[in-house]
Image (cartoon, rainbow, N blue to C red):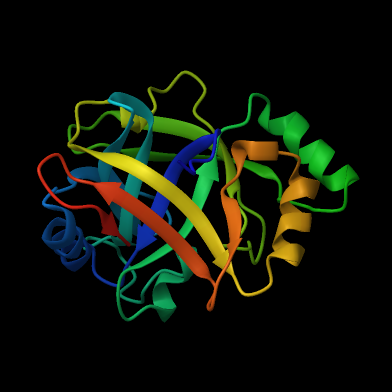
Length: 215
């Protein structure tokens, strides 16, 4: 099993949120629950992840343009404005101390960006707040850091769930990315980097009554 020890959530993005939710449901048989809108012009839908039968705290975030956004242009978050189809884009990890992790990473030669506050409202109006790294031109092959504080992590809420079998990063030349992840200082908390023909993430899921699905 290859699952990052500190995994918080996997981000799958697309240029249309409704189409993205339908795409995920067609492949897995699981329909994501509406999450809410962000101030960045995006909105999401969520599916909890189970590992060895236990739920969370991990989940899949399906993210796309907020249908009710004021600006008709596609948001740039996770490169949504450059997508023509759904794609596994990146992932978040939850270190024990987000501020200390940033300091340590910078000392070792990798800057994950400053820690910022972010929030969204759930469909029922509840405000969720968290802190995360949002560096300019943030690399998508490297996880961003997140801290939920007193907010309940979404993977622990009563949303639909699917089993996480493995999550890896594929690279033609794994060495440079492995060096960056070492500088980030997460150890086995980050996704395992494996050698392969083309760069990208490999997310393997198992529906309750279905075959293993690789996204």
